[in-house]
Image: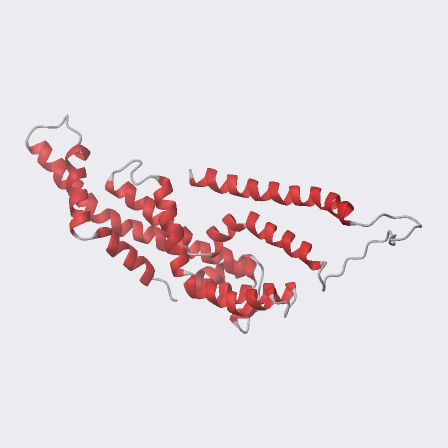
Length: 262
């Protein structure tokens, strides 16, 4: 379900960009004055300046492109991956098939990602987006300023072994002098790998107590000769009761948020 949602969002963004590109010539033709030799004529030559009001169309096109890539950015460069994997593993550990549903897990992971990324988002808004919206910096400087907080966030969550592995795969023999010298093509896959490692570690720790309950229930059923009854039928209520009594959701969310070096 999550994969279909991401593909649908990306396809919608791509169609919006295509529609903008197709309708831009028509809108430009409507707004142009008549071309000819009489009064009110203009030169048919079109001059686009990337520094004045003509840059609004370029900014809109850039914004639409970013929106079309937003699902990929959300997954690759934020805490969303770790959260949604841990929540899915928790559901499997409890023995539940579709409860909570995928929409609930994805929504919870999304808003928790916004909570975890709020300092980074505020930094990008203050140092990159606001100056860019006021025309104080150009597009290239906006991208440089916006990528710096994201780079810092990802590097803080990435294990050095993963960075060294991808640097070796990229053929970078010389060690970078500073963290800013590490390219984003190395930082992003190293960050994703570290996130998956930590998510699976969480999943292992989540499975342990519920697996013990399954073993105890299965042993009790076999000792009573009830071998035909599925152990999950008996163990599921006990697992749910244990998870509620220890405030499982609160403990899990608190632990996940505290594992991030904000």
